[in-house]
Image 1 (cartoon, rainbow, N blue to C red):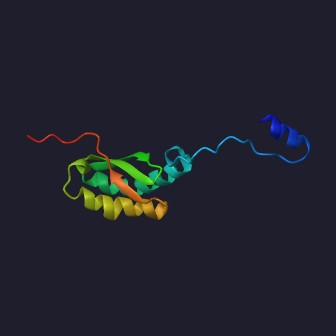
Image 2 (tube, rainbow, N blue to C red):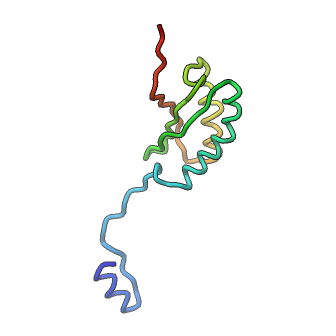
Image 3 (tube, one colour):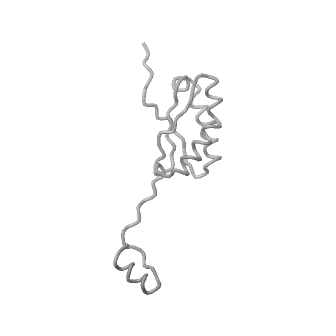
Length: 112
């Protein structure tokens, strides 16, 4: 507590610190991550049937969810349809202020 806040507290009113407020970081919000993970947990069984899965990588300050499509989902020609029509819709239902869901695959498939 700063000296100004202590002085005011002694007088019965607290004065907030004059430090700048930290910007909200959605990636560091455990409640937001939990809600997104719960929505992904409802989708994962359908992905597992076809040999795929999904992993939450990041949530940007613009509320864009970045996912890794894993297994068969990483190379499936219909993965973008699954992403938009299934995964993105499930996440947006659970967390309406999510603006977009993107696939960020760290390992690109190697084709001969």
